[in-house]
Amino acid sequence: MFLDTANIKDINLYIKTGVFKGVTTNPTILLKEKKSRQYQLNSILETSVEIVFVQLVGSTVEELLDDYKALKKINTDKTIGYKISMDFEGLEAASKIKKMDKDSLILATAIYSADQGILAGLAGCDYVAPYVNRMIDIGIDPFDAIRKMRLFYDDRDIKCRILAASFKNTSQVINSLDSGAHTVTVSPKLFLEMINKEVSLNAIKVFNDHGEKIKKY
Figure 1 (cartoon, helix red, strand yellow):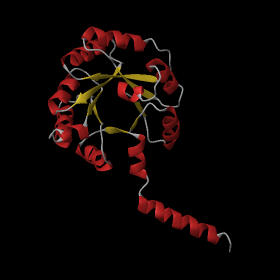
Figure 2: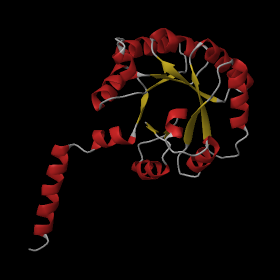
Figure 3: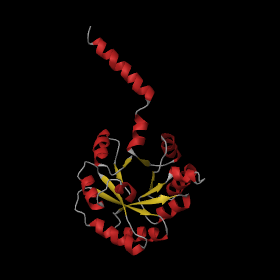
Figure 4: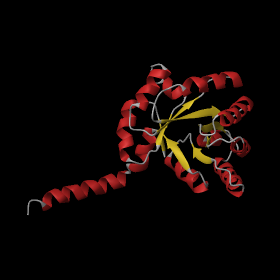
């Protein structure tokens, strides 16, 4: 799993649970922190996360490649992954980056359909991020799209993993994984909803209360 945030306090808090492989960011998430992208990335890279995904910014192939080259200059022992939105320019940029450096980790984002995901996989992207709740909002079945992408990758031995994103509730997370997503990225708020179930918290409180009483015997 990945944690979808750029907030350093949240990253330090939730990464300790041991279930997150890394952090995903985008310009909107970074903007919330009211600091420059470079400053925020450096701060994230100082935490214990292993992988940080950063979105390339640009409307042309050249702009996307320039941003990629700028991010490549960051000196860190952590892995920086590059998020690229999947339009015509993004597809070409992803393909060119993989040809320049096959080890560059690329996550294709803004995936709203199976065909987008299939093209991203063929271009050599390492991950694709279908936007689950956003797809539902516009009448697209994201779970069917995930199943079709997964079947295409598996049948052709394409080493592309589905990292589902954009969730409104925990059911969407589970349904994505059940449909074939390899992993997901979730906000801190949604992660808490996944783990802190009211019935469980009530049961834990009873156990702890009884545990304190047992100590008195």
